[in-house]
Image 1: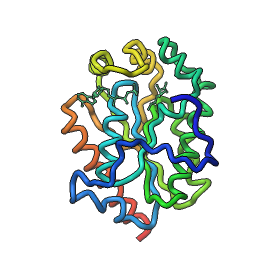
Image 2 (image 1 turned 30 degrees about the horizontal axis):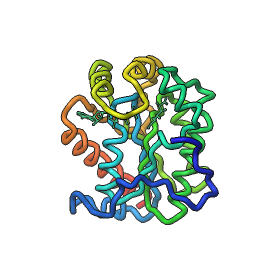
Image 3 (image 1 turned 120 degrees about the horizontal axis):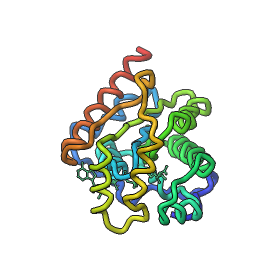
Length: 219
Ligand SMILES: Nc1ncnc2c1ncn2[C@@H]1O[C@H](COP(=O)(O)OP(=O)(O)OP(=O)(O)O)[C@@H](O)[C@H]1O
Ligand SMILES: O=C(O)[C@H](O)[C@@H](O)[C@H](O)[C@H](O)CO
């Protein structure tokens, strides 16, 4: 929360929930399989779709650092969202750039991949992140798009405790959401209406598939 960490800082704002312990031995070498690329895994979707929950699981399963998008907002953005006021494109612009820079910084620091939570509600927001390979040519950007009916998300945010984002924000986010189109081939879609276990399993399986595809790409 608060001011974003400047990209030049030595401080790594990796969530303390990220651990080197694998949850599943079969997945422990998933990212390491592909030594040719660095991967940025954006966990996306509107408020309440489970970005933070799923991202922490993926980061742990793949032994990758995790960047919590919420921690990169300015105080004024957080204040707006706490009051139920939707952010504008202008409010999100620097935030998106900061997330892209931070993800690249983590890769430069030696990680083969990084998991980032970011709503990425509009195509032009996703395009901001898609610029990453311009800076490092071996970077592959993937969006894991978590989706469910608005009612499901409202219920989940309503039941969640201790978060600045209220249930009213779900509607405003769903109303500006531009669901990824079929031409956005870097998107993995996961229906999150089911149990958390099902969602996590499906997300990880689809990520596995994307890593394997990336391996074949240049071979
Ligand atoms: N598949 C699921 N089934 C049931 N509950 C879930 C599921 N996924 C997430 N949750 C719960 O829903 C709530 C919202 O999840 P989470 O905070 O991860 O969403 P988010 O997308 O990061 O939200 P925000 O954009 O507001 O930060 C949490 O209380 C979480 O435990
Ligand atoms: O308005 C938005 O674009 C979202 O609410 C973001 O502000 C969230 O902070 C982020 O997606 C958390 O991961």
